[in-house]
Image (cartoon, rainbow, N blue to C red; front, side):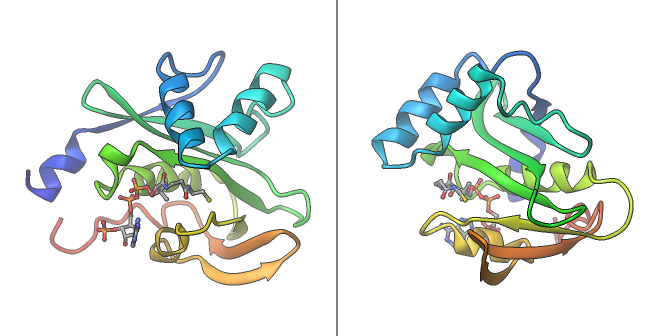
Amino acid sequence: MARGQARRMIRLERVVGSLPADFPLLQAEARAGGYKMLDTLAAEWTSGRTRFDRPGEALYAAYYGATFAAIGGLTVERLVPGGFRMRRFYAFTAYRRAGIARRIAAALLDGIAGPRRIVTTNAAAGSEPFWESLGFLPDRRNGWTHTLAAAASDLNAPAAGV
Ligand SMILES: CC(C)(COP(=O)(O)OP(=O)(O)OC[C@H]1O[C@@H](n2cnc3c(N)ncnc32)[C@H](O)[C@@H]1OP(=O)(O)O)[C@@H](O)C(=O)NCCC(=O)NCCS
């Protein structure tokens, strides 16, 4: 499938109220691969500790056609005044490299109001090329690995040829 056509198959839904019906499948794949971030997401969602509902925060589910394919969120970064942190990104292995997580990141950045903000992330081992492709730069401090000075829409300009 042409890249542009594949990207038109991607649809995002903001997660509010309850996690996606197929979230447990994604959680199980992540856990089997040694990733704990979706266990943490589920526990903090259930307890109400993190619901991605403060100003600027959001959690998005991505669907490829009708299939739940990935999740990712943004929360306030308590260590940086006015800053945010990308968290809980995970895509089913079968749906990787189709631009799905990038679409989630773009939507999250688009929801940040106001001036350029610092956005941090603690990149899981192996995910560094993903974050760096979005413009994040290595910056190992305070429990994060990368930062981006982001403005809304930075990632929404279509790449050349798409
Ligand atoms: C990291 C992850 C969320 C990326 O999801 P994805 O939907 O495959 O990412 P995208 O297709 O949007 O990638 C966008 C760009 O990032 C870069 N990229 C993504 N994955 C990459 C990889 N494994 N190797 C090299 N570059 C990569 C590429 O530049 C890619 O663009 P391209 O395909 O046009 O070259 C996914 O690989 C994943 O779930 N990994 C396991 C969990 C994890 O590490 N999560 C991050 C927690 S911090």
